[in-house]
Amino acid sequence: MTSNKQDLVFTRIFEAPVALVWRAWVDPEMVKQWWGPNRFTCPSAMIDFREGGKSLVCMRAPEEFGGQDMYSTWTYTRIVPLREIDYLHHFADKAGNRVAPVTLGLPPDMPEEVHNAVTFKAVSDSKTTLTVAEYDWPVGQMMEMSKMGMEQCLDKMAATVARSLPRGPDRA
Image (cartoon, rainbow, N blue to C red; front, top):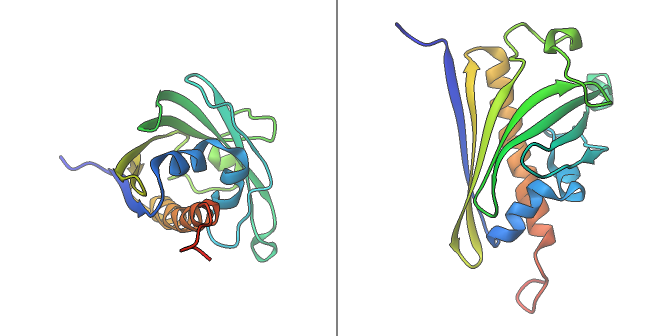
């Protein structure tokens, strides 16, 4: 019997200390710089970063895609400082209440809940490996869109982290 689900796993190496890459996930101002695929913005990020806490992030589509706001919650199930963040991703209304993705016009293959695990590994004092896993995606269009979106988010995160590095004599 073959499974109709697949995990998505993304690994990136950041030229930055683990504490800074970690901060990109927990500092609302940094999250606002990278959450959403290219040309999408994040006008608000309310981060309640603790086990059992729930963050509410807004992703705004560009005008050519309708300009609408889409909200998500991240409910944290496990936090190991500077090493691991596990959370459940849900679509939500602007008050943070869960909503079914189909009510937002998304296709039926969009799951109502996606378990995410983010791991951080210091390679050196100035290099970090970040791995993001999204579990049990139904194979199909929404999985492929999520894959593309997370890859673009991680590109934006790399730029955000690079801008946040301290400027020294060798970094003009």
